[in-house]
Image (tube, rainbow, N blue to C red; front, side):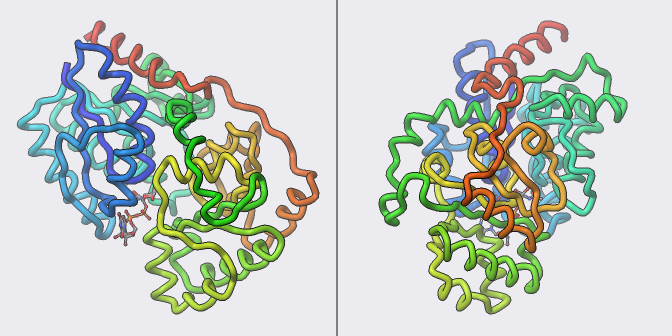
Length: 363
Ligand code: UD1
């Protein structure tokens, strides 16, 4: 059985890795990694393959950056050629990036079965490009593997037959557990004189936070205030870096005392997360990793497609203007403790492989 695992952008690599390693244990599968090329810098792509013990992609589409239509269109054109030649039996797409949607549409139009890992989650905010990708992907797939019960509920409400949906748990947590000892043996904090539980990790890359000068400037202003209390380390995403330069905000960041780094590899980044006091972010996956580790996480967004991290976990949605009041709760030791959601246990890839075996048996 030929299976394609589609990966495009940084968070996808952590999602395919545990599944790739689990599938390779089973000789009835031929697994190929298809990298669409949406993320292409070494520190946004190759370093993740190295850290996660993944081989180089079997096929690289080399699509690169561009507008949404360019990325989606170019990915579809390139992947259609691959599918026509390779004729996979199953295409597995992960997460919610442009390639998730582009490759699902391409494969389905060629009558190839498609499975979505991390299906069903919704922010209900159609201004987010990822929400469109999730909705379109989930309207045409054959198999839906969800990380949490809300994913099942959303899919059923959207008319998906419950027999196609399986709650498999959180695949990011499977990566975290697969890599735990290697992540813990990194020593990135020491390089910047950061002490255990004595620093804040910051990441921002969402268009809603970094694509206008006004938002980005006020965010940097608040980060400076946060830094006055506890040292801040900020691995800067290329989108954010480009915009800081474009809006002439470089000086503000330099004067702030914040430790800025290039984007970090998986092991280095997770090492920082393991020992931090709290996280300020707009990422999706980090909301989940912090919930699992019981670390306070302030997410600067109006909504989240991962509501379980707020209702059960350690995540709080904040606006830029109320970051400081939430930070004060954390600094005072008054932040709530969370719980780990059901099936966030490191065994998600095993369950997914069982679902794949079941699918092929029934075919
Ligand atoms: C994409 C995903 C987002 C995910 C994020 C993780 C979509 C719609 N967005 O957003 O869901 O959370 O990845 O990082 O799929 N760039 C580089 N080098 C790289 C990659 C990007 O310089 O290796 C530049 C691009 O040229 C572009 C900018 O960074 O100017 C944004 O990249 P893009 O892939 O369009 O979107 P992300 O913001 O990374």
